[in-house]
Image 1 (cartoon, helix red, strand yellow):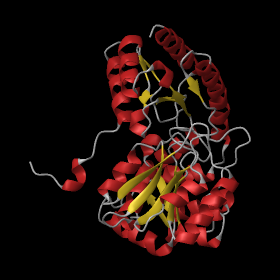
Image 2: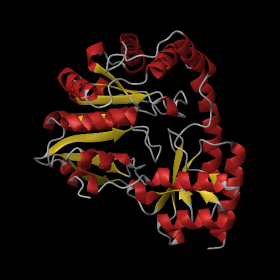
Image 3: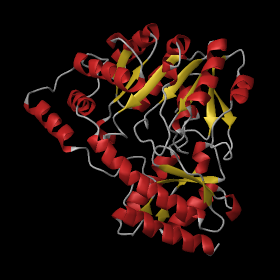
Image 4: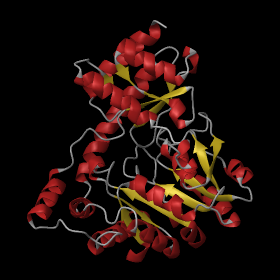
Length: 387
């Protein structure tokens, strides 16, 4: 079969592949400890579920406007104003089928053939794939563990070429959990403004931030940055609503109008019932988020301490999200071999760093119970000790 050239380079997600294999083993009765999940292990809060049930009972089961209901878009406008000092009009908002869908739509709208999109490395696995499907070219900027996996202003400016269209920033980050400071973002913003480079700011982990870290939306730093930035967020992580598939974006009015047009002709509207639940989530306070955060901090502190106590492994302390990105270079194993052998020999699932562009690391999610974390790390410590 002759397929379109733009999809021939697409590969399956290594994060989903490992998680899928682990789930299959568990289904077959194998006692697998999985650190693969990119979703909170907490249930969706009850008040949000009740609102969805009410929406069904009220017959709110038909098409909505493609870019989202007026009520939800206004709630998102209010959220940006309240939380991020960003002031948008509803016409600058598009609600999509998850934050991933928002990112895909943005790249489809801004990318012409061979436009370059700058991506800090390590990166979330889908960024380069989305860029390629949009006809663009992903250009990677390698970061260092010493600098907490963050790009420098000098590195950013050096990477800008004639075809550079945008920079993707993910703060807090998947897979590293790094969080850019206000000063770091300001330095990046100044360069982007000078060169007229779009910023795609993936802020899906915004609410899951720890210690003294501060979340800053880069679009809020000045008017020029506001006009160049697409801000992406969603309900999946903060409200434990991964399966509900509601994400949203805000950005320059002309571009957002085209994103809305694209959605008209691709997916139509997001799920109506999930939109009703999302409206409740954004309007119902953050008690449920704070509960999750407290537990995530306990788990993070434990997993960081344990990994750093294992000979041949080390890890930075993440300031956000629910992942640690552990250095396995002293084991001498490539990350895929490490992950496959660990699953086969010790029944522990982790995500190989090669999927994020870094072969000397593995990602572990602490979005699982403390009991499972302790048990899994006991197995990892024993297995690594036998290498």
